[in-house]
Every structure is written in structure tokens, then in C-alpha cells.
Image (cartoon, rainbow, N blue to C red; front, top):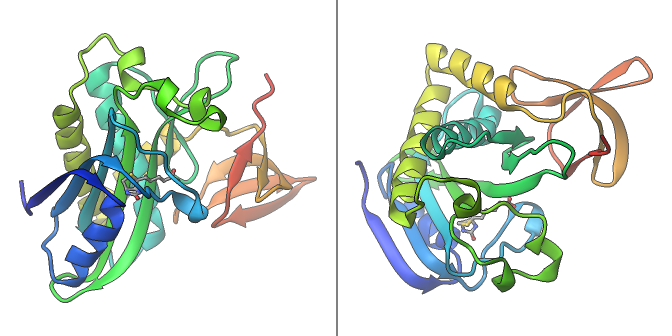
Length: 247
Ligand code: BTN
């Protein structure tokens, strides 16, 4: 595998360390992994709780020159595909790139979150650092009451034994494949197909940043989410999406 691997028993944020390495010219595939994080960062300035048992990984990627907005979705879709195949569980993509488990009428639960930071690299030019957290063998008791019941844990879902290092290898390979796919025409076609196939929530009502936006109707070619309200269509390109989960 390309790039070097830096491992920490504990670090504030693998993302911050990988960003530093990218700025210093690290090659694609360089990764930082930690057993625990003191200040794990999530999207939209959220905190990412990081007790032992989770995968906390940040990987340096060459960013595409075009269609860059598809990279976060592609990462979610390829990681969901690879983990779902290995651990034999159905995983869905909640826009833009949460990996969730949807089980009948029960609320969806988040297995993995992905944060993409863009950075200039002296080696790669436009680069991105993908920070990926996966609940692998996490003990719910070590999570705050606010998130404890909303997460999915891989080892609770799968009959296949879950080993952190194996999950790490699968996720790194999926992230590199996702990034290289966004850079080629044939890859892009597959990225769009996979994202649409995995996307959860079409046909459901949604809110973005607390504001009702209508019903989710489709995923656009650049990764934007199309919603429809009273016959009017609108593209959502950023924000905190809440999907109405009432059956
Ligand atoms: C989200 O769903 O809000 C994204 C969560 C991303 C968490 C990962 S864990 C590894 C990397 N280091 C961080 O500080 N954050 C990301």
C-alpha cells in the first residue's frame, strides 16, 4: 500500500496530524491512525467521540481537478460497499456521507462518519484529507447518553469477527479507490451509480439546518441532493440533513 502509516495510542485528532503531513508533502495513501482521540472532529464543527474500540483514521488523497464535490459521497459509498461486503451487512449512505444501518421501522443508526478537509500539498497540488471514524467494537457505555442509542457498532451487527486492523485496511483501500474513481470518466460513472444505489431517504421529507426543505427526490451528478416542495425542485449542496424517519 502506498504512503506511510503513523499510529498513536492517543492523539488529539488524526485529522489535524494528517493535514500537517499533507502540508509537508506526504504522498497519497499516507495515513494516521489512533486508538483514541482527545479532540476528535466531526462535520460542521461537531465533536466526534472517540473511545477505544473505534477506528479513527485520516488518509491523504490527491483531490480531483473536477467534480470535487463528489469526493465525500464517493468515500461514503465505497467504504459502505467494502465494509458491507466483508461483514455481510446492508449499509446505506445518508447524504452527504454518513454510513448508516437502516433496519425496518427502527430509526437509522450511524456506523461511520466521514470528514473531508481540503489542503494544498507541495507534492500533490490540490489534496484532501479524509477522516473516517467507524464504530468497530465500541462499548456503548463509553459514549455519551446523547449518541449512545443512535450509533451502530460493527461487532454487534456482524457474525464475521471484527478486527480493527482489518477494518482499517479495508477502509484505506476503499478510500483510495473512491478518490481515483472520481478522477476518471469511467470511474465517475461508477461513483454516481454506487452513490445513487446506496443513498437512503429518497421519498422521505427532510430538513436542512433545521429548515424543512421538502421531499428528497434524487442525487445530482455533482453530488447535490435534489428535494421537491410543492412542485418546486431545489438542490442542496451543504448543510446538516435530517431525514424524517416516521414510517
Ligand atoms: C462526522 O460524521 O461528523 C464526521 C466524523 C469524522 C471523524 C473522524 S475520526 C478520524 C478523523 N479525526 C477526526 O478528528 N475526525 C475524523
